[in-house]
Length: 457
Image (cartoon, rainbow, N blue to C red):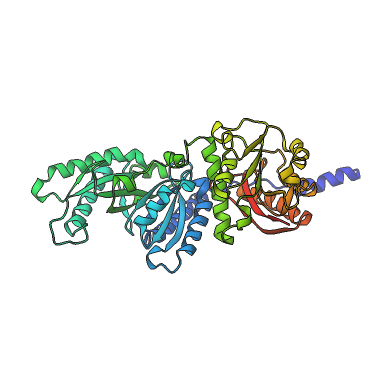
């Protein structure tokens, strides 16, 4: 045989037929994995008193936020917050964060009204440590759980939910919230029926969606998803739940997160962009302290500015005497009417030469002190290149402060996005004299976006 035949034969001898995994081994592995997940949830719930329902894409950012909040509140005995862990919920793109807090009611309210978290958090639940077995998806399971819940709440109200005051207490009126919400209607009807069956004199609590004094929370913490999970769905005690009852009110505890972000103006694109830069500056100041006073009242440049949210923030927060708002697109009328706005309706490449002709930029001690850019570019390295061009051409003042959004257009994982951004930032350090640079994954960022902030000497 030829040498080629010998080479081919040597290759073939290295190939082995794939061996199917024994179904019993696969089944046992699945059960072991599920047992591990259940044990983990059980461990979390021994300390948990607050569950936060979070968009799965925001879990890492939410954990970082809570760690920063905990560091900020360090020393305050009742304000601690310990992140015990997280788990994917049965609802699509939803995860549950398990927290142990010194004051879960206050923290739940803080998280619920923070506009920076409006896209990350769906709802929070005050619960008591420990788990209850049941199954809200079956008729009998839901009926049994309703009776157990009715007894538990009656016992607690009988022992005094209003701080054990000996004076005549206000009647306890509960609003019920259930996760997942598709089981809420059935459970609510069953509990309400049990309440109505009790004579008024011995009734410990009532149910109402509006005029309530307490929130009754039921959260599905775990359901088996391993081999044979379909059969277990019919088991009346196959799932694990956390339950809690806490003082509440309509004003403080029923929040529509879709409306929170509208607090700045109208909830439009300008407002959303405004909060993105506000979050970025807040995150940076939390690490480095308040920004220098010489940034206030300075010249600023907003690159890729339409519809104008960042321009508006620069004017309102920093009191910039002028913001060069550069974008071929239109600015919102609410931004255009601000006297500090100078809209240059062109690309930044064409705007830089014109800026050098501007007396405020060209004068001694002049130059742009604040450079922010949220442009959409196919190559995110161009964000850095344009800033470096402005520096070389004399548009930037010494020690200019910058905020850049780097937008990855390839990749599908956090690790891939982080690696791409790190590569660009590392080269940025090689090409310029930078100081106090931070990279953030903001709540306002998409999954492939990172915000880079610092000074360029």
